[in-house]
Structure formats: structure tokens, C-alpha cells
Length: 271
Image (tube, rainbow, N blue to C red; front, side):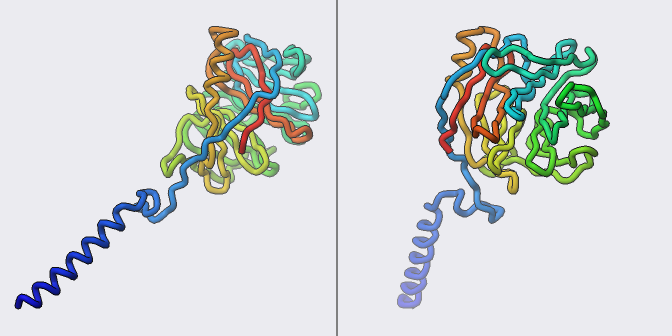
């Protein structure tokens, strides 16, 4: 009997030793649902140069199209769609939205500007040449925040964790992709820009720019732009949150700004 107990004891000791070694592995290697958890990498950046930005602009959408900077601004009674002179920060052309409408994210597809509204459940389409409204859409999502174009679909953020895909021209629903950070749904996804196969996004009320893999929704990298935000606040104490990412496909330059910021920055991301 002693021999049996000894063998059982050795087996038990070996079993528990193995279990202890296994438990020392990082938790993300063996997640409960069996899916690998991807932690976002830290995305470095540097400021290349800065340009003037209108401190009256409550920036909601920012884009570069055929060499010109375009901006959608918000707030009731102050919402506009503007074509900007990059070097001076002055508007070369603009229209004001109806005072009952709060302008939000915007993007340009084949000479058509698409612009969201916040709570009005409307989206507008304009001719880029003269800002003449050519169509108005009724949309089903409760709030419009950010908007971009991936070469095939319009991509909308609504202030939560989802990216919602629509057909240009019809606003017909295609699909929803949930954005996650370290395995959990993200939140406050705001202004969007599609850059080299990834969706870049501001996180409202936070100093982060996310780099999102649109095929999975995973935030693969994030940049903390606190230093840029602080610089804007030193120049204008009323400067609000970072909001506005624009990419020039021709020059490969990236620009960022924020609500009521006095400057627009050309930046380079590290990855």
C-alpha cells in the first residue's frame, strides 16, 4: 500500500507542478473564448509643420481632395461645409447648414461630398465644385459622428464601438464591424480617415488616434496626441478635443486638428 500511495503521490506532484507552470503563462495567450487578444502597439508621431486653423471651426470632418482641404463643422446655427486654403487657414468657399442641423463627419467620393448630421438622422450629398446640394438621405442610425471612404464603401461611426458600412449614392446598409481594443469593444469612435488599408479614428474626449484593421475591427496601434492638444490649448485656451484627420493620397501627407484649434498639423506616424 505504501508503494501505491507513493506512486499516486508522485503522479499528483507531477500533475500539480505541470498545472502551476501552465498558469504562469500570460493570460492573453489562453483567453477564455479561445481568440487571441491583440494589444495595440504604441504609435509614435512627429510634427512636420503647422498651418493656421480657424478657431471658430468646431471641426467634425476633415479631408483633402485634389489638393484642397475641406472641413465640416458643427454646432447648431454654426455648422458649415468649407473649402479651405491650407496655407492661410481661410475659407475659399463655404455654405452654412440650416440652423436646426448639427453638421458632423464628411468625405468626398468622385466629386461628391457626403456630410452627416448629428441627431437629425439625415445625410447630405453636394457637388464638390459648387457645394450645391444634390441629394438628402434618411438614415437609420441614431447619431452620425465620423465618415470616411475606403474606395468602395462609406464608413460611418456613431459614437459607440461600431463602424457601419454603406453604399455610396444610396446609403444602403452593407455591414457593421465592431472596433475592439485588447479584446474589448472600444467606445466614442469619432472622426475617421482611411489611410493605406487602415481606418484611423479620433476617440472623442480622449487624446488618442486609433489605427484600426477594418477587416477585424481590432485597434492594432494607437497614438497619444496629448502634447499636440496641449500646444493648441496654449495658443487658444478654448481649444477643445482633437478631432480631424485628413490624408492626401497624392502627397502621402497626414493632417490633424481639433475643435476650435488655432493650428492644423502635418504629422508623420511611426507605424
